[in-house]
Length: 271
Image 1 (cartoon, rainbow, N blue to C red):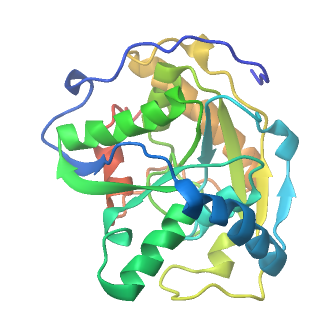
Image 2: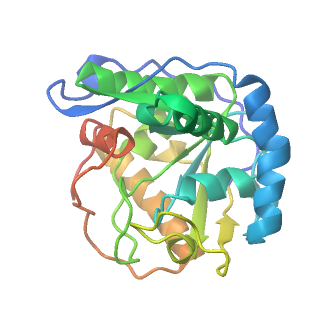
Image 3: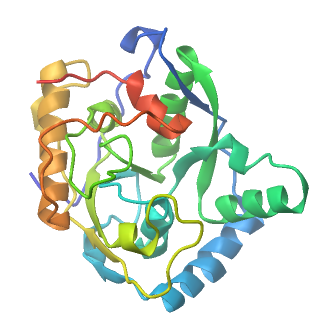
């Protein structure tokens, strides 16, 4: 059911009992204030990107201007995590590889400043509890009233189809009570195809924000059935926005970074 006003208390914190502790994934560093660099990105880089790429943005009025919110999007390109913060009417945080933040020399500094400027939060590789720490990072960002962006498919679609959603995003939404705003990205795979080093200036991106989804009627985060039904609702909303062909299967491409590897330890079902 679409909703616009939320006032819910958050359920319990995730623990190691919620997921296997033997699967390798990523862990997040503690939340931090982004400071002047993030302000620079919000007020300089984002407007510049909008001017250069002229993204078509629909449904900005559907995004709650305050309080916790999860943006759940299809995933076509590396620049998806740039397109969403640029188009959203409020700051958005997402996880990025820690290697983007700790590289040597000038290029390493430039990478760190850029990813900080667009709202990225670094995660480190790890196993078991480390992945739960990454999930807890997202929860703490939501507890603080922030917006986070996640990809239910887990990894990028290489053929343009929309794959079945993993239930980790629904797990987080049901656990925290945060509304989920579905996002449909169109054309990001043409602006920067997989393997491209630089984005094209000839293509335009469309970003569609759907109405917030209230998933609480499905049940609690501990219920596998509730997570699965909530995930199906999220993916149906994304499909309505993106118009992609449905793959009808999970995207089983090997995980290439800690963000994608997190899904391997989140509670999910395949029904």
